[in-house]
Amino acid sequence: MNIERFFAQEFNFDLAMKPWSWQHGVFVIIAVSFIYLTLHFAQAIKQSKHEQKIKYILVFWILLLELLYHLHYWIHGEFSIPFHMCSISAFLSVYVLLTDSKKGFQMLFLIGITGGFVALVLPDTLGYPYYNIRYYLYPLMHINILIVPIYYYKAYGYRLIKINIYKTFFFILALSPLAAYFNNVYDRNYLFTNSKPRIFASILPGWPYYYIIGIVGLFIFFHILYYIQSKELSFFLQKLPISKKNSEG
Image 1 (cartoon, one colour):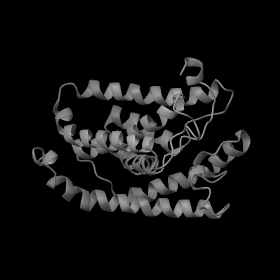
Image 2 (spheres, rainbow, N blue to C red):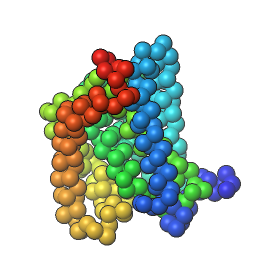
Image 3 (cartoon, rainbow, N blue to C red):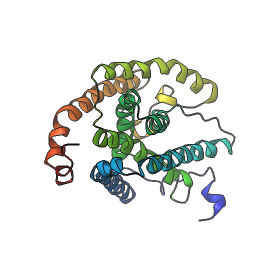
């Protein structure tokens, strides 16, 4: 590996992370570990005098990764703006970390955990091999958008309000025409309005049916998240050893 290849626009699907590969297994282990540690130390971090510093460090880290992601496109002459759900989640994470906004948490919880979960279960590094920066940006960026809403869920006791499922859902629908414009003009695939996600290409039907399936699936998953966080997850966390100490928090 050298610095030139590390930042190159180079594809090799044989050396890229694929679902159910050992690289995928490492990604899952790291992500689950960070989620566990976030739940375990959330209350301690919140009560610590260093919480604000930790938040600033995380803000810097999230913005650095996001900048590197777009710079990789820009230096190779490609158009890139933060219009994917996961990029939107990254900026929402920064906003929530800086403001402790309950309103920001609502949208972040839905699209951040959705995007992070999909990336965790079915990773797609777009063919970037292990010696390319994009191979590493993918898991790091998605872990961030998972642990920030989980931190606020556990440490601050923030909860998703049902009406915000519909607000967030229609916000994404409202972005779709703008995403379609950028996709047509700059040959991108924001919000997947231009083509099917590569990882699902072999099983999904063509346009517009795959998009309808995706939107319906998103709507259902938002409701699943709401049910889990309001019912089952609260009960489960109370039973975990990591939360007994902080059950009153």
